[in-house]
Length: 293
Image (cartoon, rainbow, N blue to C red):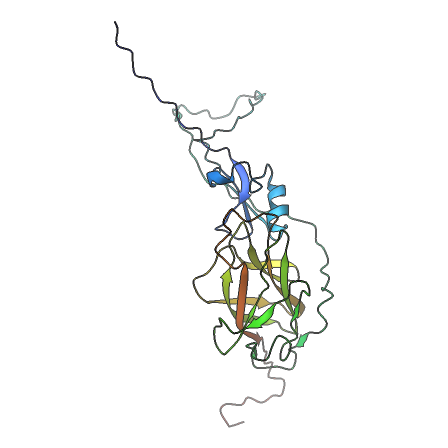
């Protein structure tokens, strides 16, 4: 009786490339098969870049990252049409049987300019036109005693003493526990030359179940997709004119996994400073050095 040949095991099928939120890159939808197997068949995966951006990131500065591993899941390429003329300068170099994989960088699709509308909750602004020194708020007397902060009435921010960078209080967002929840904190700043907004932040969000982004006039500048182990310093340039800065924590339309999630779905900010840009044109005709004129 002839000895049967051992069977060759079939390779495990690689996951299909799909669009999904990248938990390590804020505001990015990634086309790849590098996602947890538990996401298969869930609402974390999308057939298109647009659907991923709309649902997960709400189109806030959504970036595109196409990183599908074609060696594991090769795409079906259409047969090219014949070239009407022979290709000039043909080469006799042999071609490799394996394709060379290079990362592709694609710029986000430009969107039409939409005029920004100041949210109705924003009633006043910081007028920094007369200031030459920094303006500071450490939330020691609440949200409205120094700076004119405004927050969403449904899921409001509040001052909290359980964790802070310095002093006795920090500002903390409301937990976002239901699909589509948003907790916003706004401040409007008016300055003829612009300046720098400097603050400390501590994140306790985790995508794809919650995230944070920081906007100027509706355009995303910074964000977090993960919890931080401690307080982190952050600075955002503020252009000249009147602008509204918004800190938002939100939950995409995803349900928590069985057993919940080990974050509070909040962020904190503390020790906020606005440093206005100042200018000297020597229009007085005098130059003061130390105490001499």
